[in-house]
Amino acid sequence: MGGLEQRFPVPFKNFSVQIKGNNTDLVICRYDDHFLVMATQIGTMGTILHARKEEGVAVEPTFNVSVIFGKRDEPMLLAITRQLIEHISSSGSSMPLVISLGLKDHSMETLKGIVSAVVENRLW
Amino acid sequence: MSSSCGKPSDIEAASKAAVASAGSGGVQVTNFTELVDEVTLHFQIIRLAKQIYVWIGSESAKLGNLYAAAPTRPNNTVSVTSILGGASDNTGSGIARRLVLKTGLNIIVACNIPKNNPMLEANAEKKLIEKLITLGYSRPKSQSPGPELSSSLLHSVSE
Image 1 (spheres, each protein chain N blue to C red):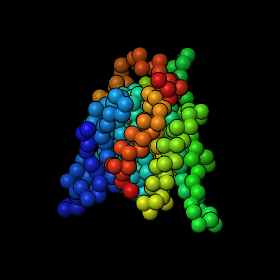
Image 2 (spheres, each protein chain N blue to C red):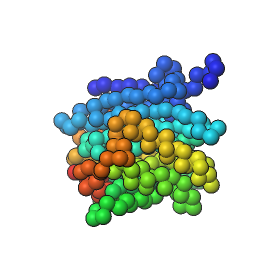
Image 3 (spheres, chains in turn green, brown):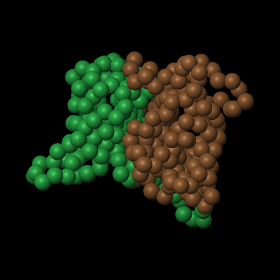
């Protein structure tokens, strides 16, 4: 390739945190058109959700958050996703978010732990 | 808390075109780029304990179509479903299906390669399988499938 060093085009972060005693592995990737966040305590991706900002006429942006694979009866997963897409939007990016959550419990403490771990290590 | 960072400003870690692998507890991330049929293909493999996520990109680093595939009881067949994109164009669904067939793993594939190019798809799939075997995530074809085949998509969602 001569003198040209090619960088892998997808920036990513891979790290672990403890949330309520559960080891949580997180991966955050930035693609050209999406952010991908994976948070797992169970060894698999778990439920996958999608969130995007809607372009509308109102001054304040609105967001569409939905489960695209997995548990559809766990509102806490939607809440985490919504908090993150709002954070992405207020940081200036309009890119949608794909997030996978494989969690052992769905408590407020876990929600806060996940959101703060992701925000602290964000790629937006 | 251990971390490895891949931001654009972190030239050392992110600038290698060769295999770059970072591990943290149960998650191993492997990124590599290959020239296939004069097309540059990027591959990202994220290995979780019981599942593997794969991204294939070419030219751009868009996410592409997302598919979930897993071995399915009772006959060890494979189920594939499209979970994002892929409505009018199912480039990548074949890759997901055959990855599971050959490796017996529970797989999520994000595929962003040009459509209507079966040769490219086939070559991308080949590179991917070679790498999965090299990394030790799957068995070479010659051996028979193991107990992983009893896992299913449903099991991957809840604990």
